[in-house]
Length: 198
Image 1 (cartoon, one colour):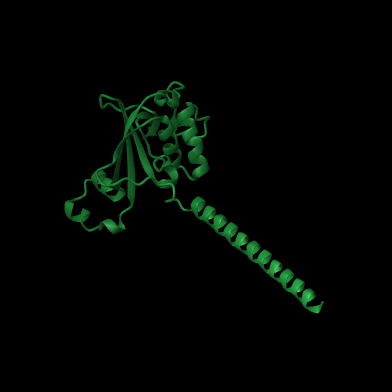
Image 2 (tube, one colour; image 1 turned 30 degrees about the vertical axis):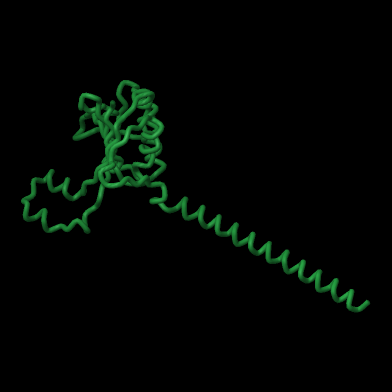
């Protein structure tokens, strides 16, 4: 009888061990999934769409352009729009030297947007055609709703990169010797996405 009771105790101990082991494995699996979710949400490079060399063009619609506009501030790039004939596709008016000038590019750095929340408000203003006096340096065009301009159309998307310091040097007409003193490692990279209507 003692052997039977010891066998039951051992079976019960094995059952408890297996149960504890399965709970531990489940906990580690859940911890791994949670850490993966945290990494994906905080890593800004996780959402990048990588293209191979020579494959920097594709045809897209509004469903691709709108998320690109919302990521422009966080990922530090300029978005430009052109009509099918190559003329600029005007998005809104930007205040330059006291006057409003039409622009076909969205560069949130030039608009002095301070954070992602303001950038989202700015893009909402462009897409909905109403800046609601939040941005005195920007003005919509006759209540133009930019989303209506791009909705239902196809655009050729082209990717490019330039260095901000090179653009500043071009603007200031610095001598070529001075421009060679800044190595590309120390320059600030800026991505450019160009959409041309097709």
